[in-house]
Length: 253
Image 1 (cartoon, rainbow, N blue to C red):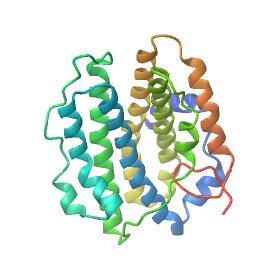
Image 2 (image 1 turned 90 degrees about the vertical axis):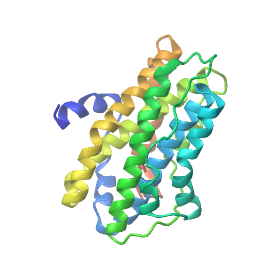
Image 3 (image 1 turned 30 degrees about the horizontal axis):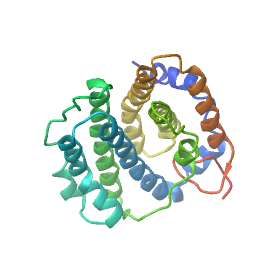
Image 4 (image 1 turned 135 degrees about the vertical axis):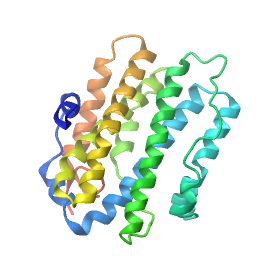
């Protein structure tokens, strides 16, 4: 499958394209550091979201504990600046089997899709950190952008609507990531171009997995809800934003 074929459903899913103003800012060499830092943190957050979904809805207590342990080295690195590239390389794989709750109504499908997503996001985290390390870009804390919070604040407050909405939000985040990787890859150096193109297939599948899970949980037509979050997402992407990040809107800096 070509990149164009891969991106076609994503372009029809998203309600706007990334504005040229963001692309012009993203390709500036002086913004590469914040782009990579934010990308690194986004990979961890994507994995954490998937872990939260599994722990809350799908697995038993011991499996939930195993998931927490899997993330611990990455979280210590980001939040406490403990560890390095070499130490993270030792914690790449999940060491224990993930067992569904006996009363889980979401089945193995949620677990399988989210565990695969976590494995890929943590691997991408490692790859971004490797690129940063090789370029002498030290990790530092940065503030979160408005994007994810701007969507999550519209999530409903009762079940299963909470889960459905969070899965839809996940679909949009992954789809936008894929679209932006494709947009900026040709404008960056050869290493980053190759790396971002390599991410397209997994990001495209992640969006589809989130959307299919949302449909499965709902058991009814969710197109109105998908459209609702699509409008919110498009507004966040296409309106002025004072904070330049990977998922930010039109830069005003």
